[in-house]
Length: 628
Image 1 (tube, rainbow, N blue to C red):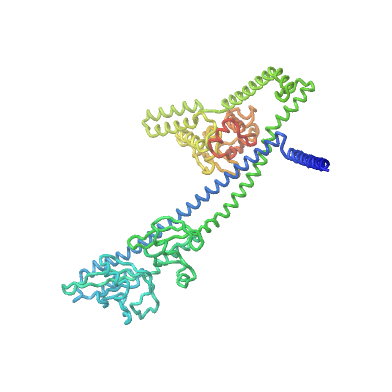
Image 2 (cartoon, helix red, strand yellow):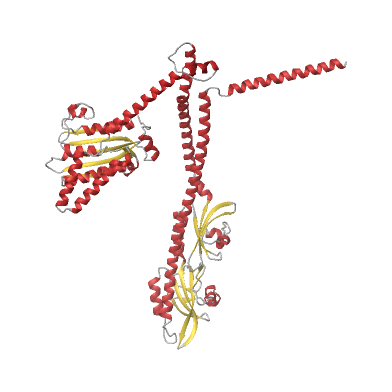
């Protein structure tokens, strides 16, 4: 009975092992089907994954950087706003101190209270400053009222000596003391039954009673509404943050929600804010993160505090976040399309080479050789490699020859300074020096030097439009001196286009044509306008003159090699410019000419709007950017 049992177990184990191997083979075949096996698939997936990761990392980095910069800008704006508000409050308090000083040092110090009355002087000073004051008052050390303005009756129940401003004045007699906002409860005004919220400015003063010194307290009740309106204006102008004012020990002076705080509906972190030095802090209060900016009001020790909840910042970033996501999505889509195009361009030659092996095996000796694969194919490839190398060498020579031919053609078309123009300019400079017109000669030499500087451009053929326009302006400045301002030159250039790239020396030849074949021999004053603007993704530069114009029968041939258009030579420069533009940017760009006899001519230069970066310039120099 034992043997059959062992055989049964062995059979069962073999069955399970075969089943496991079958499942493993099936899984392996399934994974092989999923795994990309063609070169095109591998490159496409690899490029897409790498570019997606890079784009995601770049997008997150740029967003975080933008978020940080935006947050820093908000903080800087808070600092600037707080500094300006502090300056306004300090200026107001400084004026109040000057009023108190004027009352004390100019009036009270020089008065004998035993024989003189303070009423007229205190009323006069009050009238001069009543817009910012509620009252003036002078008290004796026992609390008796000596004088007050405006004229008012002291309340019978008002115990002056127990008032905080009174006791503080005697505690530190050498200083001026600012109180917190409170309702004035000293006087009864028969003409005004309102409650006045004031900030009291008090100081201990020396009083002269017939040569006997006594002590008193000078009280200036400032109108609290002045500071309140100041801070309310700041809060209304900044919806994402709010500002409040406290004393150095955390007592409230102003808060936009002062009523809610007094009723216990709202709370504020006064104690912690009072302990902050001037600067920027991040804190968490009642579960809310916020940015706190503190600035101290000089002399008083008051602290002006700006609070910006972090959630307000992120609400402002919401549209930016959506914009970044949209840009990332569009960029991702563009990259997928670009990856497909690049993959196709990269793998197509390889697929053709693979097909060429089949052609070679079929006996097609004209097909290209692929070295690799089996030993037989590799041996066959090496045997024919010498011939293939020769073919490749010849092909490279052809490519180099064509490139040199293109460069030679471009250099031939790249017109430089007309020797005749240079001769006439130097002759004019000599004439100016001989005629002792030194300033004009210096101006001509300066303009000519700048003209050469742009013309050379360190050997570059692609320059910013700003340099091209400067070159044109230098050229026209020289021509205006040569022709003794026989024409007027106008410039209407949109600054937006100056930061884009152009082929060098395309405006000056057209301006030269406008002078020599347009306005040079006009009886009346000629006028040339150089206009530049951007429209969508294109740039247009127009040279407009009010000269004799071009006959309609010549217009169709101006931008061709047809000699009927250039009997007087005016068409050569235009063809030059037109070809150079099209060599760099494609046939969609170049010149467009409009003209009417006796009405003038307008030549329009059409260019793509390419930002003037070093990378774009180098690619254009190499012929790597085409906008056809």
